[in-house]
Image (tube, rainbow, N blue to C red; front, top):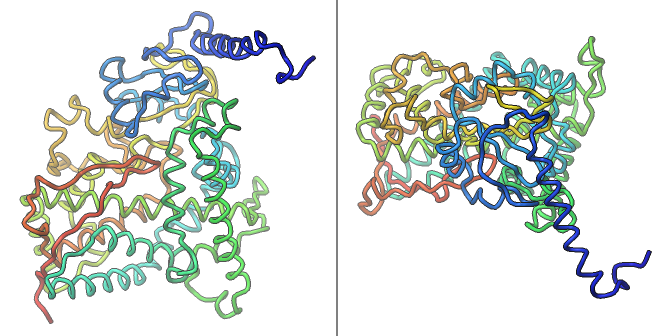
Length: 509
């Protein structure tokens, strides 16, 4: 057979035509239901790319608009991958509780291969014994109530330093970059809990994590049209390779330094997460499954925890603040609760948090309107299954639009865009996703195991900053002019930094 370069000119013209016809045939095959079963309704798809070109920069919004036309269980084709989009509480319950096992796994992607060491962490790993053992290790060894309580003095110290810094800015009538302050605080707390140290100026781990979160949340053509992967049309592969290499060098350095630490440091009472994971390495942690973690597992888990803790906690706080600034009634009501339950003569302590019911409503309402993960980390269908009369093909991508569910007028009434914490007044709505109209941490087997740590961090920081300071927008800017633009990735942060002018409101000792 002649190489393509030596084929006659007419034959060369046939190659792209054959390629197009093959792709079209494959697309039609993917759309054809098995044995005449009914598929969920959905928009028509283009050959090869399917509906990928329609998603835009804010896919959660586009998918919401499509769901209004095609329904709460909707089919798409993302390149060559069939997908199902879930956009209502009732539909979410079917996928996340009734048939949870069938949808408990994660798809394998370029991002999980590069950033999670071939899905060897917990977030992106496939459902099975390995994932169950990893989750058990995290739940018992890292996120238990007793373990989190040992870090309470650390959180109090770091937050106290931030309050003193803002108090100085308030005395000088200086505008504060709340985005920078909050992100740095959360980063400092996480660094000390996970690595046992302050932020290291040798590394730009924060910047790498932000890049990784963007890439992990992007719709990568290489994942959906595999034969186009070598072309790296979007440049994602190059970025993933670069980011994963730099992250691995940082994590390897940190793990090695822990291993080489002096014996007195290794035997200290309050061990950080790296110490705990290293103590489990190469040992039979689970007697039933001979579960052993190695160095790669440890680095994958560390990356999962850093990414999950940093962008998510700071993201909720930085969405709550502009909503409080735009709603002075809510801000005053929250400050009044803090005065009555905590008192103006002291700082907020973690022990105060369970008694702050209105703070809880404010956090829930923030997560309803601005979910950290607008499209819950995708799942994959493990078997052919019928859901609500619709045939769902094995290996279909399952996308739960929690952003759309949080704005469902059938659930939340007509004022869905209004920031109104009192809608949670009855206290029946749980963070764990038992009520499927509210899914801030996911639901079912793949729900977030770091829920308790995330809530403590968010509530304590938000309460302390609202209790200690009054806040105004700079330069007489109207609250209605606040930029609420969002950006899309694996998380949904604000697009621009939040600037505000603080004034200290507690008695000066």
